[in-house]
Structure formats: structure tokens, C-alpha cells
Length: 525
Image 1: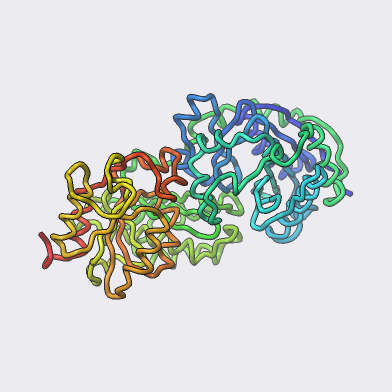
Image 2: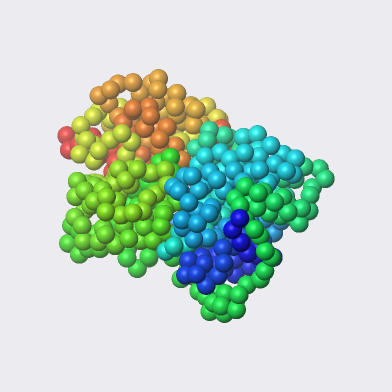
């Protein structure tokens, strides 16, 4: 048995909790504090992004500020979460190589999550660990987990969903809708559950803490001794709290506005979403600055910072960047959980590929609003553009054709003008009524292997369905929408079914440029 401090910091603010995570990890890594099991709660509720995420992309900031929900950044990776006042967090701190932090990251994760699942099961629900990092009850997530290292220190944490406030989740976070589709589930309530859904009467928080303490003690060999913060920890909390309350910390992975528009790419992997930003140096040939964000876990936490630094000065060219990234991981002792170095290399080089499109009557901003599917930049004029795919949500909500394919070209929206464009370029226009309809069209109508489609969708839709579209094997070029979309409004699930009620706006100028680009100089209007 190893002696662990049992620390319960009660209900405190998001900034205080994030500062304490950092302080405890530092102090334990340096040997000033003992290994620790901490219970934490948040008051007020807090929307938290993972360490590598951009707050502006993951959190509905306007809603959170209006409702008094604090916004902050975790020191661990992963996706955005809402920590309700009723929620309970648990964290285990120790030194690498000591129990329970022996072996590979995967074995550590399995060991600790299995112990946590056993504790939750003592409440009367069949909880089980599901790789990569969830604890589930009958296939529904009740707890998410993640870890981070600092020097010789290791922290592994988990959250436990207690009271059902699912509407608050949907209104606070942008990320859940995207995560639903990754697991092919249409409803948030089909993916997650709360203890209040499963237990009646609900056990007290003290009871929940008690079963977790018992399970961690038995399964992880902990001799838990209740204690408070040390004087050093309290002093460091006073010193570090202002930083964890500041925009310098909360917005630390947001795009720097002063640097102008970068070259961007979005890539879906099994480990999460990668968003790469590359700022060219004067002359446009080499990287001046790089930013890589997403809902992944990197070990150690500094790994992505080191990779970004290694990219500075590299040529903005696919083969050069692929070699640079693979060389970096070859000589690094770090890794991204569930992601191969080749996947990171591909994501970064995809951002560099944007430079090959810029200059064809397209600005860098416009190039970033083009999404290539199964198509390399040099292939844009290699295939006949035969189909123009248009989203139903750009039709007027009052239109008789809103819920059916086609258009009577009445002039009340841009769809009719797009039908004119399609005819001018010798293309066949199709209005897409839902995600299932899109998959049907790609699989059954866009079957000419020597052809491609041009279409329009929002960036969130592309990010969410990128891999499904790639899996069809059909080549395409998509143009970003020019307005607030269903995903900005928190209605992505309705759009998936085809019953989103608002109207989106097509970027007609960019759509016309895209059509001229793919048809080449001989077919231009």
C-alpha cells in the first residue's frame, strides 16, 4: 500500500481548480507534496476546453457569459466539457514509475478507469471502462477521463455526470454535436447519461466520494489519509490564480489576430479533430508561426508546443513538412494518444497545400474556405465537374421546395441562381436534403470515376462528416457557407435529419470562383 493524501477542495471557481491542477502536479513532480487523490467541484458551473483547443471554436461564449458560466482551459487535452455545480471530479496525482503510474499510458488509463468504474458500480449501476477514455453504463457515457505529465509528475482525472442538465450542455458547448456523429448517434441523450437518470433515490455526493475512495484504495493499493493543502501550495495558489483567471491563459490556443490569415486545414482522426494553422514568413515560402489545436491528448503536454517550434522556418511544401514532422516524432519521447505521426504529418501538409491554390484569382481567406475531398490541389482541373450539390438550408424556409429536392427558380433565394450557374458550366444541380440524402447521392448518382462534384456546406459540417465523404471515394470541392449555420445555433442534429428551420447564405462570389477554377480557362463563362 502507498500513502496518498485524500484532498477535497470543495466548490471553488474554474480558475482556482485549474490553478490547483497545475500547482499539485508541479509540487508532486518536484517531491514537495505527497501523491494525492483530489475531489473537486465547480461553483459557478464552468465550460472547460481541452488544453489544445481554441475556446472560440468549442464554447458558446455569448451564452456562457450571459448565464454566468465561467469559461476556462484545462491543463489536460481532450474535448470541451461543461462542469455543472452538481458534477464531481476526481484526480490522482503521483510520480511516473510509482503506482498507479507504471507502464504504458494505455495500461495506466485502463488500470485507473477500471478502478473508477468499479467504484461507480458500487452505487448500483453496471459501469465499465470503454477504451479509449470513457466510463460507460450500458453503452452511455457517465464519466470522461484524461491525463497529463509534467517532468516526473503524472495527473489522471475524471468527471462524473450527476444531475441531468442536458439542455445546459447543448447551449454551452459547440463540441457535442460533432462528437455525436463520430459514434453514429443522433441524440445527445443516447450517448451520455447522468447518475440521476439511473438511480432513485440519488445517493449523496459524500456517498459517491466514499465508493470511489474505497475502490481506489482496494484496486490501486492506496492508503488514503485526509489532509488539506500545504503552505507551499496555498502560497502558489495566490501567486498563480491571476494567470489562470486571465485571457492570456484562457485564450492561449486561440489564433493570434495580429498575424493575419493563416493557411488552415481540418482533419478528422480516431484520436480527435486536428486544426492546423500555418502563417507564412515574408516571401511566403517558409513558416513564420504554427498553431495546432484540437481535442486530442498529447504526452507530455509540451509536445505540441515543441512541434510548432520545430516547424518554424520549414518550407511550406508537402514533402518538406512531412519529413520534418516524421523526424520530430522519431527523435521525441512524446506521443499523441491514438494518433500516428503520419496522420499529424498529413494534417500539417494539407494546410501547406492551400498555398498551391492561392493566386488562382483566390485570396488566402478564400482558399481557407475551400474543402477538398479525395482531391489534391494539382488535380482540381483533372476531372470533369459534373454535379453541383447545394444545401437545402439555403432555400427560404417558406419555399415549397424546402423539404424536397429541386427548385422552381423563383428568385427568392440563391438556389435558383446556382441552377443557372450549373447550366452555364454544363453541370447537373442537386439540392441535398439531409446527410443521408448526401450519402445516397454520392454513392448512387456521382458514380463517374472521371468526374467530381462542387458543393457548398459549412465548415462544421465538413469537419463532422469529412471521413464519411472520403469513404465514398467520390472527388469533390466544397465551398464554405457565408453566414451563421445550424452548428452555430446548436441545431446540428436537426440539420442531420433535414429539418433545420433557419436559412443559411451561400457564398456566391466564392462559389463562382470555385467553378471557374475547376473548369479551367477553356470552360469559363
